[in-house]
Length: 168
Image 1 (tube, one colour):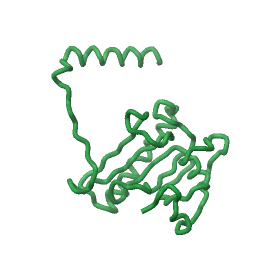
Image 2 (tube, one colour):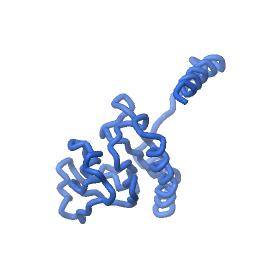
Image 3 (tube, one colour):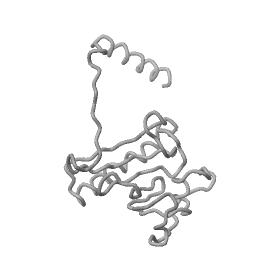
């Protein structure tokens, strides 16, 4: 539908999102440019902290992105209050998509880093409505239960708990 040059630009109403600070943006980040109103988007929600818009390369009908207005590349770059603001809006966005399009299910997805499939390095949460096997999106879980015994899982949990305790 759209390409990288955003040929559909003229078909969108260009509106600058509210409540943003120019010093919190990366000049080469496409999502920062969307927030600054330099690149068009199809907004579905906005408040002081977050901005939600339709994905221009959707995997399914209703595919939506939710981003913080402050540039953060990864979830671990976000302060707890920033994450709380973003994730507090997620149920509202998901419910609106569910009620509007009546999908059979929905994936909420975030990729952190190139090895995880991240292609835009501004934290974003995908809302991907699912309509069955023909919707063109899927992930197959290849569990490793033979590699991870109960004891090994407990050992890994202790490592994470230790790290969390040291940061408290």
